[in-house]
Length: 143
Image (cartoon, rainbow, N blue to C red; front, side, top):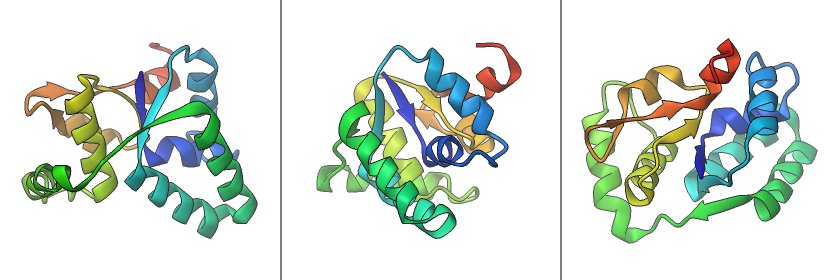
């Protein structure tokens, strides 16, 4: 399984996005399920609706119902989310990113598709483990 951040979904949906080619290539080469969180879904829906319109948002929701696993974030995660957002306040860390770090820790998986290189190069899951961002690797031909 591979975690998927908002930037990946936005790039995939928008052919004019500078990350679009990398997102499409990564998707073609992916033979594992994608994992998202509700905060990522919410953030993606909001941005798709405001940038590309209702049809893009509906296509995204359709993708979510068929092709991804949703890591359930709940009240039991709030302390961890708060601690992460406080720890990375200098970036700052948003709720969607914090939920992905919590998911990575719970699932034991640090591979991610994200256009947010700076933050996911900085964040650590299980407090010490670096993320392996597959999207930039795809963009540079490393993957």
